[in-house]
Length: 110
Image 1 (spheres, rainbow, N blue to C red):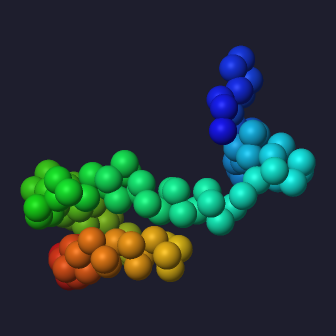
Image 2: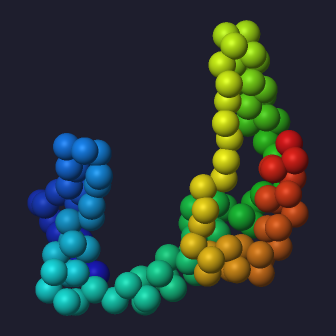
C-alpha cells in the first residue's frame, strides 16, 4: 500500500474513535484484504512492536514504575484494577510459538 503524500493518515472522531483514512477508503472501495493484512501484522508484531528477541527479563526500571504506581494508589486509598487486554488469537498463537508463555506468566505473577 502506497503512502498518501500530503494527506492526513488518521481521522479522529469527536467521541474519540480513530481510523486510518487510507484503510477506510480501501474498505469502501472493496480493495482491502483484511486477512492478508492481519497475517502480515501478526508476522511482524513480535519483533517490530515487542522487540521480543531482545527480551531476557522484566525491566528493573519498569518494575520500579509499577511499584511507584502501587505505592501512590495505596497512599491515596485508590483501588487499582489491572488486566491484560485480549489479543487476537492468531497473535497469541504466534507469540506462544516464539516461547512467550513464560514471559506472560512472569509478568502476570509480578
